[in-house]
Length: 188
Image (tube, rainbow, N blue to C red):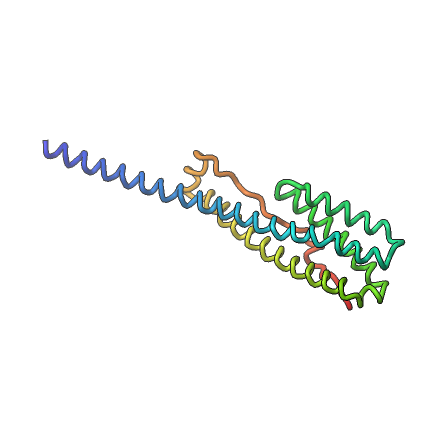
């Protein structure tokens, strides 16, 4: 009888260890998944800030460059596309399109010395530049969080629990290589 109690005790201990390991692994995966969601929310906050600045910037430039209608339409269309984009990949594509349209807007501004000297334009340009830096930081934090999460769900024994409970791979928020390497030229 004492041998049976010892065996049951050992089995109970082994089961308890497996349950504890399971709980630790599962909670770790939940933490990483929520960190990814939080990081995406931070990107979303900065993108919304960017979207709110763009109409003011367009209106300021319109006052000086009334005949540049196509540029304004492209920026407005790109902004609307970016606002309505869903999913990481589609959002990245929309943001690339918006960045290109903003480059065109700033190129138009280069042709108008009075505009470049405008206090309102300079303030908006500075706000947008600061927001772009915050977006870049938030994108890096998001991608780092996604990488940590994706690595974790692919490692043994995490992959077993991840597979059982539907922890799927997350997408990175990538920008076009050419757009990333090309520094926007801003002159005053």
